[in-house]
Image (cartoon, rainbow, N blue to C red; front, side, top):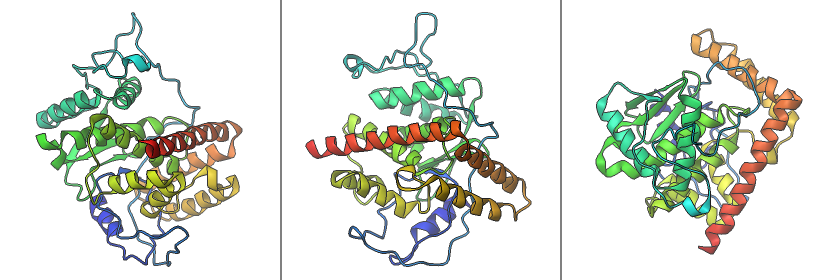
Amino acid sequence: MTSFLLALLLAVPGEARVLAIPRVTPSISAMPRLPLVLPRGGQLAAAAPLALTPSVLPSLPFAPAPTFPVAPSADRPAPLGGVFDGSAERSDEAVTGSDLSWLASGDPRVAAALEQAADLANQTKIGRRVLWEAAQLLQSMPLPVDALDLGKNHGEFDYLERRLRLHRKLLRPESRAQLAATLVHELRHVIQHSQGVPAEAIEMEIEAHLDDLALMRELGVEPPPKTFARQLHEALLEGPERFVEILGWALPERPRLAAMTWAKIEADLLEQLKHAKRGKSERKKKLVAAIERDLALVRSKEGRASYRAFSRRVEARLKREAEAAKSR
């Protein structure tokens, strides 16, 4: 159902705008180039909203962002079979022999593909960092992984059901680089959902897409033509706002602290909560709980500080990477 609805999202005519907010954190790096590329300042005409099935958030209490260790120590072995200390002089050293026991899959083919993709990701600085942080978070609570037909989508983190879904076509040997980029993208989302950030913040997608673009760049892989990743790569050359603009067309109506007031973010969440409470399914109940958590976050001093710090960090990184892209 999720892949069908995402396909509907892509099928929206060039003059239409999707008004519904899908509470989902998918990897959209594999999506075809959007049928809508407007000049700066271009206007989108309103259309009837699509009823997209929301995704999910684990039922965890709000807490400030955890502190992840950057490097293993002598009495704390590296969970991925090697060492990453974040220093420039070690950035080219591959980490091999990945232990992915914290990604739970009963399918040997999926497990083998994940290990090979992780070994490839471990050849990059960004891949090692994300895999390390995810391992610290998930070793005490493994994350189920499903390989399904996701249509145009490569992967998604269903944060209410707490499941990672990958497109089964990525299990092919020739798709290892795409699987590595998707794995890093989705594991970034897993990490983000533990960091005291509204579940649909656009900054989440900014960071995850910067991660998968960085991984492909470190591997020497160009984003394929006519893909969303290629479109974001080209947008990065034009500047940070263009990058966010492209993301906004694919994922409309999401909060972005740099462009919205706290009052606006809270009002939007209250509107979402009103609609979510109309349903009585278990999924709707989880959605209500997730939105209520987000409301508590943006209303509290602690929650605002957590989101503000996250947003500033991501926005600063976006600016740095846009400047670096122009100089390459």
